[in-house]
Length: 148
Image 1 (spheres, rainbow, N blue to C red):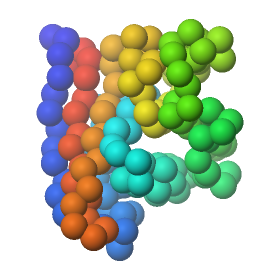
Image 2 (image 1 turned 180 degrees about the vertical axis):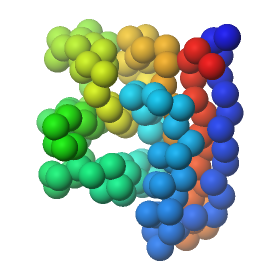
Image 3 (image 1 turned 90 degrees about the vertical axis):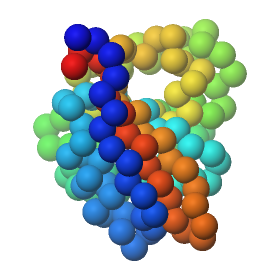
Image 4 (image 1 turned 45 degrees about the vertical axis):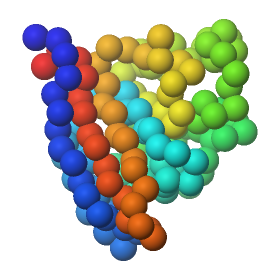
């Protein structure tokens, strides 16, 4: 049955617990290759993606793709794609980049600021919402969407 499966809430973690948080998020995934990262500016989306990539065995330096829109990282024989759509103004601008090919490549696609491309994101994905708490504290709401 298609829909959403609420996975979990990870509360009150900070930078010192980021590796464990990243592991918990990886373990909560239901085999989705598309991961949406949502949170306000400065909430730690890229920092979390760096931690996840380290655990997944990414060999390259993980950096924010704010100006390049997409970064490609080696993960063994595979490639992982990291998107940042903050600077994209509309869906047409994004589709000109050929992003649908990435989304349907069966590779991991980690997407920051996915709202502008929401109409072309595959129906099966994991969403990670980052909520800023006091100081460095973060809460993470995880949900898997699709044929579960």
